[in-house]
Image (tube, rainbow, N blue to C red; front, side, top):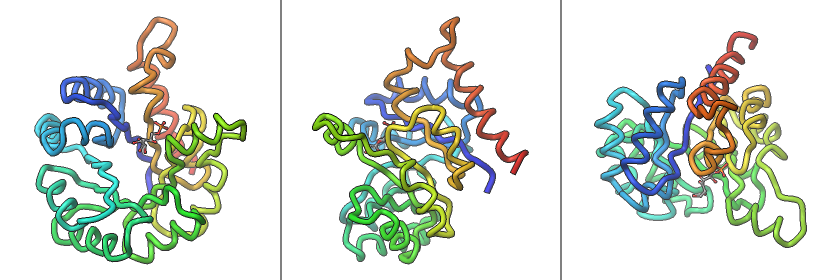
Length: 231
Ligand SMILES: O=C([C@H](O)CO)[C@H](O)[C@H](O)COP(=O)(O)O
C-alpha cells in the first residue's frame, strides 16, 4: 500500500480544525482525522463540517467505539466519515456490529488495540473479526502515567514490527511518536502515518526557523511519500 499521511485534528472547535486541515492539505496530507477531542466537542457537526469543506478527502472519525457499534458507525458514515474506529477491548459483538455497519454504509473499519493485554493478539483479533485496518496504539494516559512513576515511557514502536508481521491488513502506529518515528513507520511495515499532537497541539516546536508550520509539514509528507519510490 502507498504510504498515507493522516493528520489527527485533536482540537476542540470546528474553526480551528478546518484552518489546520486546510494547512495540512496544502502541505500534502492525504487523510484527515476528526480526533476524539473534536468529536467530543463538536460531535457529528464537526465531521459534517469537515466533509463539507473537503468533499473528496478521506475522513477518519476517531470515536473509539466501545458499545452501540452499529448506530455509532452509521451516524459517522452518514455525517461523511469514510473510516470509523472501534476498540479491541469492546465486546466481540460490538466489533462485529461496527464491521457490519461498515459494510452496509460503505465505510472502512479501523480496529484499535489500545490497552490489550497482548497487543499482537489484539491486532490479530481485530483482523479476524473483519477490521480493515489495525491501529497499534499506546494511550495518552498510559504513556504519561507510566513515565510519571519513573518507568520508561512505552512506545508503539516497541512492538510495531511484531504487529505488522502478525496481520495482513495495513497497520497504523499511534501514541507519542516523534516526527522522526512517524516518518520511519512505513520502513517498519506500517504504511499509515499519523501526525498528531506535535502538529496540532504543540505546533510551535515544529515550525521551521522562519516560523512556517506548513513547510515543516510538507517536508514530512514528502519524506513519507518518498518511501513509496524506494519500496
Ligand atoms: O487517540 C488519541 C488518544 O487516545 C487521546 O484521545 C490521540 O489522538 C493519540 O493518542 C494522539 O497521539 P499523539 O498525537 O501521538 O500524542
